[in-house]
Length: 412
Ligand code: PLP
Image (cartoon, rainbow, N blue to C red):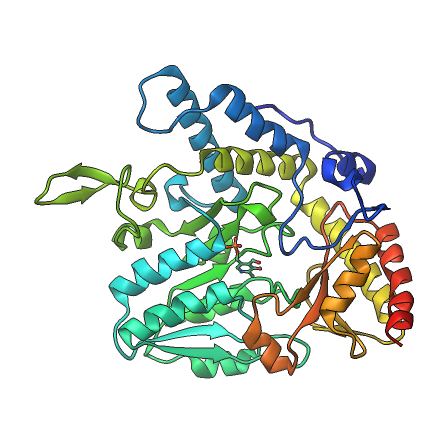
């Protein structure tokens, strides 16, 4: 894989690294504010994926020939990069999955299927993405488990006193989002994990929206499971990570059966492979893994600390600018947030806001953001949302702000 040179935080250089950012949409320069849905890809990632298909493509793990060995080496190098990125103890704790959705389904099916029993309780929160609700509902229905929900205040913060009241001897698992995709709230997951561990309750953290914006250290957090979505981390779609503590993953049964996850198969009995292969049945998304490894190289070349610093400054600016726009109401005002701003403009439907902004080349998201229970809690059906990344700029925020009065005019 190509080495990339260490950069300082040079926003022009960074923007040049992302070919799509120089595109026009509706004859206007693209302003991409939909990073919570998926992020754009730097050339470094695009090149790594095309190079893989052009000169390294082969299946992994099963081949004796040169290409297969090379593909396997890159595939496992990426695992090591991800291990280091999350500061996991061992690379066997890094399981390749399709994304956060599959990671949570894996834990719900495997851990839930094996270790949860009728009457056991799982704690979630009111701000979860559907992918951290539905898999638990499915297993709960099958095994007669009970879901308990941590409520939030009007700012969009978890009520920690209420959380502690929900913990009981029946609580067998807690699954919480690190950063809310709808509100940007950064949850105090370390506090939650520590409280849970006092009662020996394992904790899964949905890291889909945290890993692109802040350094995550799974050993320091001491979480039992952590999820990553590659496509939100400037990598390809269809690849993600489930981190799990080795002692838990070892006890869990496989999630899917097939090639690569076995040690031996007869018609009478199958024995399973060791970690991580036990959870990686079938041909994986090899190019996706290569791209994700390249994305991590790219992020490391800038430095997550610089990325966080830049984004926090941008977020502060955006909050001030949007806060001063007449008629625009920000939804979610937690004290600790990443650069996600949900908003409403009077009674203009968020889809209309999205459509009008698109005419000006500005890509935002409108809808329930896969958090319908959160919307119900807030008394809303939808919001408009901008979500920033480290390639966005204050100028782009100014351009966005200029379109809002136009929007009110159109709908007045
Ligand atoms: N959790 C959160 C907080 C998300 O924002 C998302 C995607 O938007 C997901 C889970 C699902 O992630 P994926 O699309 O990688 O399965």
